[in-house]
Amino acid sequence: MVDPVFVGLAVLTVGSAIIALETRELIYGAIGLAISMLGIAGFFLLLDAPFVAMFQIAVYVGAVAVLIIFTVMLVRTQALFSIKEDKGRKAGGIVLMLFIMVGAGVVLLASGLNSTDSFAAPAVDFVAIGEEMLTYYSPALIVLGLTLAGSIIAALALARREDVEQENDRVN
Amino acid sequence: MTELIDFLLVSIALVAVGIYGIVVKRNAIRMLISIEIIANAANLNLVAFSRYTGNVQGQVFALFSIAIAAAEVAIGLGLVVIAYRLYKEIDVAEFRSMRG
Image (cartoon, rainbow over all chains, first blue to last red; front, top):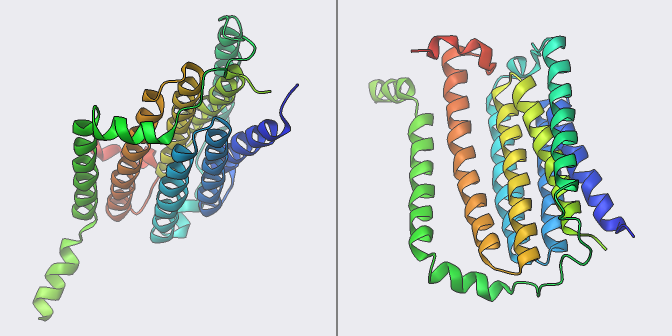
C-alpha cells in the first residue's frame, strides 16, 4: 500500500525541481527550488526528523532561495533571457538523466534493500542530536561556524566595488 | 506504508534531474540551483538511512551538510555577481578568459 502523502510529496519535489530548471524566467526557477526544498522538508517530517526539517526550511527556503532571488534581481534581465543551449546537448542531457535514473534504480532494486518494515528501529530523538553536536561533534561544530563566518566575509569582499568606493572618496 | 527504498528512489530521481541541469544549462545561477538539488538528494539519503538504522549520526551529518551548502551558495552567488560585473553576462560559456 502506497502512502498518498508520500506520492504527493515525491511528485511535488521532483516536479518543482524540473520546473526550477526548465522555466523561462529565472525568478520562477528560484521559487521552484524553494518549493522543492519544502518537499524535501516534508520527507524529513515523514522520516521522523522534525529538527532537520525545520533546519531545512529555515536555511533553504529562508536563506538560500531568498539569496538566489536577490541575485536574480541584481543581474540585468536581458542576460537572464538569453537562452543559448543547443538541441543536441539538451537531448544528450535527457538521455543521461534517464540513463542514471534507470541504471541506479535497477541497481537499487536488485540490491536486496527492498525489505518490508524497514523503519522498525525507534525514531531518533532530537535531544540526542543536541547531545551529539555539543559533545562528540563539538570541534566540527566550531569549524562549521568559522567556515560560515569566513564564507560570509569572503562573499562581502567579493561583492565590494572598489570603483564606487574610490568615486565616493574623490567626492568627499 | 513507505519503505526505505521509496525514499532512495526519490533521491535518485533528484540526482538525475540535478545532473541534467549541470550538463545542459549554461546559466551560472541555474547550475547553482542544480548543485543544490543534488545536495538535497544526498541529505534525503542521509536522513533516510539514519531512520533505517536508528542512529543519530545521519541526522547530525545532514545538519552539517545543510549549513555547508548555505555557505557554498553565498560564495557561488558572490562569484556570479562578480562575473556579471566583469562580463555583463552570466552564461558560463562566455567566461572563457578565466582560463589560465
